[in-house]
Image (tube, rainbow, N blue to C red; front, side):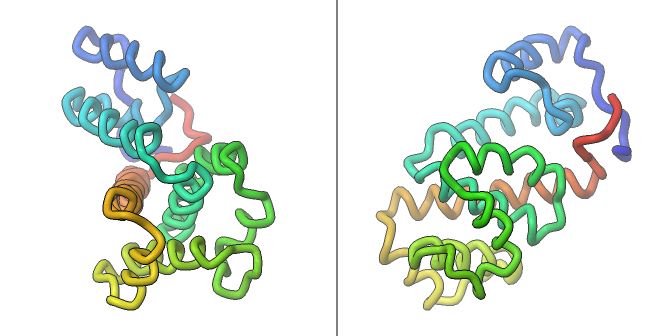
Length: 174
Protein backbone atom coordinates (compact mmCIF):
# COMPACT_ATOMS: atom_id res chain seq x y z
CA UNK A 1 0.00 0.00 0.00
CA UNK A 2 1.21 3.49 -0.81
CA UNK A 3 2.84 5.49 1.96
CA UNK A 4 0.38 8.35 1.46
CA UNK A 5 -3.32 8.18 0.71
CA UNK A 6 -4.18 8.87 -2.91
CA UNK A 7 -5.47 12.36 -3.70
CA UNK A 8 -9.16 13.18 -3.78
CA UNK A 9 -9.87 13.41 -7.51
CA UNK A 10 -13.09 15.34 -6.94
CA UNK A 11 -11.44 18.43 -5.44
CA UNK A 12 -12.21 21.54 -7.48
CA UNK A 13 -8.49 22.34 -7.93
CA UNK A 14 -7.81 18.91 -9.43
CA UNK A 15 -10.95 18.40 -11.53
CA UNK A 16 -9.68 20.07 -14.76
CA UNK A 17 -6.45 18.07 -14.63
CA UNK A 18 -8.32 14.84 -13.80
CA UNK A 19 -10.46 15.45 -16.89
CA UNK A 20 -7.36 16.09 -19.03
CA UNK A 21 -5.57 12.97 -17.77
CA UNK A 22 -8.69 10.87 -18.35
CA UNK A 23 -9.05 12.26 -21.89
CA UNK A 24 -5.38 11.64 -22.72
CA UNK A 25 -4.73 8.39 -20.86
CA UNK A 26 -8.15 6.78 -20.47
CA UNK A 27 -8.08 6.82 -16.67
CA UNK A 28 -6.16 8.27 -13.75
CA UNK A 29 -3.46 5.77 -12.84
CA UNK A 30 -2.15 5.45 -9.29
CA UNK A 31 0.90 7.51 -10.26
CA UNK A 32 -1.27 10.49 -11.15
CA UNK A 33 -3.59 9.87 -8.22
CA UNK A 34 -0.55 10.47 -6.02
CA UNK A 35 0.84 13.37 -8.04
CA UNK A 36 -2.51 15.16 -7.84
CA UNK A 37 -1.78 16.07 -4.23
CA UNK A 38 0.14 18.84 -6.01
CA UNK A 39 -1.79 19.82 -9.16
CA UNK A 40 1.06 22.00 -10.44
CA UNK A 41 3.58 19.16 -10.16
CA UNK A 42 1.07 16.76 -11.74
CA UNK A 43 0.50 19.17 -14.64
CA UNK A 44 4.22 19.59 -15.32
CA UNK A 45 4.78 15.85 -15.01
CA UNK A 46 1.95 15.12 -17.46
CA UNK A 47 3.31 17.60 -19.99
CA UNK A 48 6.86 16.23 -19.74
CA UNK A 49 5.95 12.54 -19.85
CA UNK A 50 3.48 13.11 -22.70
CA UNK A 51 6.31 14.69 -24.71
CA UNK A 52 8.58 11.76 -23.89
CA UNK A 53 6.02 9.09 -24.78
CA UNK A 54 4.00 10.65 -27.58
CA UNK A 55 6.03 13.42 -29.21
CA UNK A 56 9.46 11.86 -29.48
CA UNK A 57 10.92 10.65 -32.76
CA UNK A 58 12.37 7.53 -31.13
CA UNK A 59 10.85 4.26 -32.33
CA UNK A 60 8.22 3.10 -29.84
CA UNK A 61 9.79 -0.30 -29.28
CA UNK A 62 13.13 1.30 -28.44
CA UNK A 63 11.50 3.81 -26.08
CA UNK A 64 9.61 1.06 -24.27
CA UNK A 65 12.70 -1.15 -24.10
CA UNK A 66 14.47 1.67 -22.27
CA UNK A 67 11.53 2.21 -19.91
CA UNK A 68 11.32 -1.49 -19.12
CA UNK A 69 15.08 -1.72 -18.49
CA UNK A 70 14.97 1.27 -16.13
CA UNK A 71 12.04 -0.32 -14.27
CA UNK A 72 13.99 -3.55 -13.94
CA UNK A 73 17.20 -1.88 -12.78
CA UNK A 74 15.38 0.24 -10.21
CA UNK A 75 13.09 -2.52 -8.94
CA UNK A 76 9.97 -0.60 -9.94
CA UNK A 77 7.23 -3.17 -10.61
CA UNK A 78 4.46 -0.58 -11.11
CA UNK A 79 6.42 0.95 -13.99
CA UNK A 80 6.95 -2.49 -15.53
CA UNK A 81 3.27 -3.41 -15.04
CA UNK A 82 2.20 -0.28 -16.91
CA UNK A 83 4.74 -0.46 -19.73
CA UNK A 84 4.99 -4.20 -20.43
CA UNK A 85 1.78 -4.24 -22.48
CA UNK A 86 2.79 -1.01 -24.24
CA UNK A 87 6.19 -2.50 -25.12
CA UNK A 88 4.48 -5.47 -26.74
CA UNK A 89 2.12 -3.21 -28.70
CA UNK A 90 5.10 -1.14 -29.88
CA UNK A 91 6.88 -4.19 -31.27
CA UNK A 92 9.01 -5.72 -28.54
CA UNK A 93 8.59 -9.46 -28.21
CA UNK A 94 7.80 -11.27 -25.00
CA UNK A 95 11.15 -13.05 -25.38
CA UNK A 96 12.95 -9.68 -25.45
CA UNK A 97 11.06 -8.51 -22.37
CA UNK A 98 12.00 -11.73 -20.60
CA UNK A 99 15.66 -11.31 -21.63
CA UNK A 100 16.06 -7.70 -20.46
CA UNK A 101 17.39 -8.84 -17.09
CA UNK A 102 20.37 -10.48 -18.77
CA UNK A 103 20.50 -8.63 -22.10
CA UNK A 104 24.29 -8.82 -22.39
CA UNK A 105 24.03 -12.61 -22.72
CA UNK A 106 21.07 -12.57 -25.13
CA UNK A 107 21.14 -12.75 -28.91
CA UNK A 108 17.66 -11.17 -29.11
CA UNK A 109 18.96 -7.58 -29.28
CA UNK A 110 20.58 -6.00 -32.33
CA UNK A 111 23.63 -3.73 -32.16
CA UNK A 112 21.59 -0.53 -31.89
CA UNK A 113 19.49 -1.98 -29.05
CA UNK A 114 22.62 -3.22 -27.28
CA UNK A 115 24.19 0.25 -27.50
CA UNK A 116 20.98 1.79 -26.11
CA UNK A 117 20.78 -0.76 -23.30
CA UNK A 118 24.41 -0.12 -22.33
CA UNK A 119 23.66 3.63 -22.31
CA UNK A 120 20.53 3.03 -20.20
CA UNK A 121 22.46 0.89 -17.74
CA UNK A 122 25.24 3.44 -17.42
CA UNK A 123 22.91 6.40 -16.93
CA UNK A 124 20.85 4.49 -14.37
CA UNK A 125 23.61 2.77 -12.41
CA UNK A 126 26.61 5.11 -12.59
CA UNK A 127 25.03 8.41 -13.72
CA UNK A 128 28.16 9.37 -15.67
CA UNK A 129 28.37 7.70 -19.07
CA UNK A 130 31.80 6.58 -20.29
CA UNK A 131 32.83 7.99 -23.68
CA UNK A 132 32.87 4.60 -25.42
CA UNK A 133 29.26 3.90 -24.41
CA UNK A 134 28.15 7.40 -25.40
CA UNK A 135 30.02 7.20 -28.71
CA UNK A 136 28.38 3.86 -29.55
CA UNK A 137 24.94 5.47 -29.17
CA UNK A 138 25.88 8.76 -30.85
CA UNK A 139 26.99 6.88 -33.94
CA UNK A 140 23.43 5.57 -34.37
CA UNK A 141 21.34 8.66 -33.60
CA UNK A 142 21.24 12.31 -34.58
CA UNK A 143 21.40 15.06 -31.94
CA UNK A 144 17.61 15.28 -31.59
CA UNK A 145 17.27 11.56 -30.95
CA UNK A 146 20.22 11.58 -28.54
CA UNK A 147 18.43 14.25 -26.50
CA UNK A 148 15.17 12.29 -26.67
CA UNK A 149 16.86 9.04 -25.67
CA UNK A 150 18.72 10.67 -22.80
CA UNK A 151 15.58 12.47 -21.63
CA UNK A 152 13.59 9.21 -21.76
CA UNK A 153 16.11 7.38 -19.61
CA UNK A 154 16.28 10.30 -17.17
CA UNK A 155 12.50 10.71 -17.04
CA UNK A 156 11.81 7.08 -16.27
CA UNK A 157 14.49 7.03 -13.61
CA UNK A 158 12.55 9.94 -12.08
CA UNK A 159 9.30 8.00 -12.41
CA UNK A 160 10.66 4.84 -10.80
CA UNK A 161 12.22 6.75 -7.93
CA UNK A 162 8.95 8.57 -7.24
CA UNK A 163 6.96 5.32 -7.38
CA UNK A 164 9.32 3.41 -5.12
CA UNK A 165 9.83 6.20 -2.58
CA UNK A 166 6.06 6.39 -2.06
CA UNK A 167 5.54 2.61 -2.43
CA UNK A 168 3.01 2.94 -5.26
CA UNK A 169 1.91 -0.38 -6.76
CA UNK A 170 -0.62 -1.50 -9.35
CA UNK A 171 -2.63 -3.55 -6.87
CA UNK A 172 -3.11 -0.69 -4.38
CA UNK A 173 -6.67 -0.03 -3.37
CA UNK A 174 -7.71 3.58 -3.78
